[in-house]
Image (tube, rainbow, N blue to C red):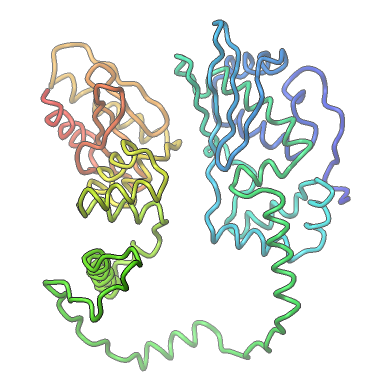
Length: 411
């Protein structure tokens, strides 16, 4: 064992460190406690966890669930969300583990090597949670972030992470057996394929200068076809493929290729989930919409809400709809000041703006503004079921976004 990495040890019976003995378990607790300034709810959460009020825990990719007994007879449903790693991030992480024999040896001993976490972080892969990544959720009426029930769940799961660091991998999207199987495949492939000698090459700056001096002129882009070209052959019978569907996909691929040639590379970075929403937002018809819902495994209402988000904001609109985050507090305070002044002129009745992470909610009017990672404000309206729906295109000015939602809401 690396002496710089403390091994498992008995945790104290009380206090913050009572729930995690290893350094990686304590990193989980630190991420929870750094994600909020509400020490009171954290203290209550520790008490709940210590008294055994957290029920059996279920761990799934991106989520841990449990029932937590509160002051009422019926326990609450609490969960903590953590973003799963993308496919390329997993490839990078597996390559990082395979690169050093010590990483694999420590994992086989159910220990999390600190060097692995550092190597992965330098490669752009967050293995341990960041404070801004933990996203608690609870069925209780407490607006705390986190509430004491979700905090109790976070503290309770720390002991499990202590004894099994692969819980962190599972929350990021892949379990122990899958990881070891993929590591074995990587080693087999490396043994079977002899690496060719690396070319001598030239410095990157020199290569770019040479290209800039003799760069060929690109041809003019042709105008996109105004109609869909017919398929050269009909699909085979019994294949389950319709000519009209294939022609629609061909037209979509042609339009995307034209955008790529024009320099618009946004479509290159879409996940399958986002690409399905993109197709649905183009109004392909009810049958396609139904199949897209089925194949993504998304609930119909949630999928419809994401198509609205795409129409108003593209890929960033989907990110804003699905992932709250903690923005710069000065930006939120400035926006709130501007909105308070605008609301004073728009209505004579008292208004209340509630702030939560990147969201400002006008509670009594069913209006919400969400600050996106592109520094634009996305207006949302609340329906009769309490669900929030994208209402209008985003704007860099929060007052303009509020006005758009206000007019949509018939205020």
